[in-house]
Every structure is written in structure tokens, then in C-alpha cells.
Image (tube, rainbow, N blue to C red; front, side, top):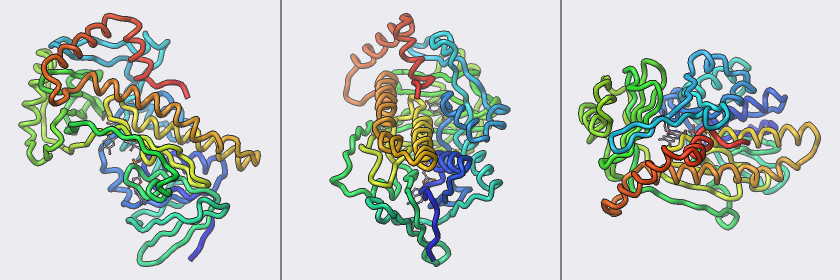
Length: 393
Ligand code: FAS
Ligand code: PHB
């Protein structure tokens, strides 16, 4: 059966849902196709820190109420090295900018609820049945299977918001796309628990044993990460082993204050830097993790997905409103300028905070010297702060 819409969106993660919401509010018809169930998407524990760009976009989508009620506005982060913590004053160094701690799961939940309330079509559990067709022409189509039925959607544009392992980037002819990738020799073991955070702001720790991050989701729910070797498996890590190792990487005061409890979720994420260029192929546009991946050290992944969506939605609204394709023609270059700056920051911060195998003891000394310089230099702290709160659109 063939149906028609204006924009077919592949993927119901933050990028796809945000795009669907912005287009619908502008009167542009769209359908979202999602491989998994809604519960599965909500069950993935991912980002925790929103830049102001993302907060503003949630407001533009009309879904910011709960975020403002439950989100935590943070005015600083702590850098821990050589057993000492040093605060980076975000608003003080950036003319008033802050970040908001509000889990990606909650962003996704708010967007799913708004989409359902508006009666907009999201087809969940299509598995790997989605195929993209004729996006190099004027009449692209998307096919998928649901409940044993084959479906086809005729559309004007396809938005590939289906993440790093999605079908959209994979559907682009190899010769038409350039991929840039760096894989890091370690992963992040993350643990979520209903225990109060060890501190009211995030703590990024550089230690001889490896990186650690103390984050949170609310005043009663904490999110912790430990750098672990790539070959580690999550079932090698009991909760007790996680908490013991985290204690070893904290300063005495945090160690004393740490409240432990059973893991609600525990997983290991690999770290990579990845960018695909360009992000447009005829009438197919890539957005979010479908086009780029950053190591999570700088908390940029979700925030890059939202800036891509801001650019793409504005371009599509301009196309349908003014019949101008200027925004669409500039989308890829415009998005990539912000993406590469976030890639650079995330790579730099990852290099500063993690232990790299085989680099010898001098590497730790050089990192500690750079951190010592950074926390005592207004210029260097400002550079960290303005990248952390997010560069302008
Ligand atoms: P997503 O991957 O979130 O969404 C893509 C959607 O497309 C998924 O729901 C998927 O099921 C669907 N899909 C895939 N293939 C499909 C197909 N063929 N057909 C239909 N649907 C398909 N960022 C941070 O800022 N901080 C973090 O701490 C952090 N931690 C992360 C941990 C992990 C394990 C991962 C993988 C990412 C993490 N990220 C983090 C980055 C993450 O938050 C992404 O940047 C964010 O999810 C990007 O959103 P989307 O582009 O929508 O991609
Ligand atoms: C998180 O809370 O999941 C989080 C916070 C900051 C980061 C990465 C992850 O840099």
C-alpha cells in the first residue's frame, strides 16, 4: 500500500522526534519509522547534559514544561586531578551561560508524548525492513514492512535520523560519501542508580587509574562512568566492583560522601569520533548520530543532533513556505562547521582526561601539567567553558 507525506523521517530518537515536532508545528506533514518499540527507545540510557541550544529547541517544540520543572540548571563543573577538585564557573566565564541536566530518556519521553497527543504517525517496530529509494531524484520513496504487510511512502524528502547503525547513511553510494573516524582504545562503563549524587555538580576525574565521571539525572538518581579497557565485558563488573573502583578514582571528600546502591542499568559504550561528509544526498538529509559521533566526554552527542535538526527544520520550513531551497543547499556545510568544532572539543577533552595505553608515565605528567595550567588560566578555562556550554548556532 502506498501513502504520501511531505517528509519521511527514519528513526524516533531525539533527532527524529525533534524534527517531527518542529515540522508538524509548521504544518509540514511527516511520518516517523522506528526500528524498535517506544519502550526500547526509552530504555536506552544515554545523554544527560543539555546545552541552551537544546533547551531553546525544546521550548520551540512546546515540550519544555517538565524539563523546566525537573531539569537541573548547572553553573559549574569540577575537574579532579592530583587528588584536588577545581571548579569551572560556566556563567562567570561565558557571560551567563549554563547547562541543564535532564536525561535524554526524558527528552525522548516528552517528545513521544507530544507526538502521540497531536495524533501524529510514528510506526514503531519496523525492524530492519526500511529501504530508501530514488532520493537522488524528485520523488523519493521509503518502503518498510509492518505486521507482515509491505508499505511504501511517497514523499518530497527523507530525513535519516536513524543513528550510527541506521540504514540511511548505509543507503548512500560509497563514492558519494567521505567518512572520517577515530576509535579510542577504551570504553565507558556506565551505571545508573537511585542514590543521591556525590556532589551537586558534575565531577570529571583524571586519575592514574583512568577517567571517571560523576553525573546525575535528579537529586535522587545518579549516573556514574568509569573508563575501562576496550575488551572488558559488562558482566565482569559486579555493582560492588564498580563502586570500589569509583571510590579509588575520587578525592577523599567525594569518597566519603559517595552513596552506593543497586544498579538500575549498567552498560559499556565504545568511544569514537566519526563524521560523514556531506550530510545531504539529493533529497536525503542525515541528522544526528546518522552523520556523526563524538566521544561523550564533552556531552555533545545529543546537542549536535539538536543543532542539526534546527538547521534542517528551518531549511525545510523555508522550502515549503517560500519555495526557496537556499537553506537546504547550505544545510550540510552549515551543520558540519558546528559539528567539526564539537568533534575537536570532544577529542581534546577526551585526550586530556583519559589514560591511553602504551603512552608511559610521562603522559600522566603532561595531562596534569595541562590541567594545572587550565584551572589557573582564565583564557584556558574560558575556552573549556564556552565549548562545554555550546558554541553559537
Ligand atoms: P539515536 O541513535 O538516539 O536514534 C536513532 C534511532 O533510529 C534509534 O531509536 C534507532 O532504533 C532507530 N533506527 C536505527 N536504524 C533504523 C532503521 N533501519 N529503521 C528505523 N529506525 C532505525 N551523548 C551525550 O551527549 N552524552 C552521553 O553520555 C552519551 N552517551 C551515549 C551512550 C551510548 C551507548 C550511545 C550509543 C550514545 C551516547 N550518546 C551520548 C550520544 C547519544 O546521546 C546520541 O548523540 C543521541 O542519541 C543522538 O540522537 P539521534 O541522532 O536521534 O540517534
Ligand atoms: C551523563 O550524565 O550521562 C553525562 C554527562 C556528561 C557527559 C557525559 C555523560 O560528558
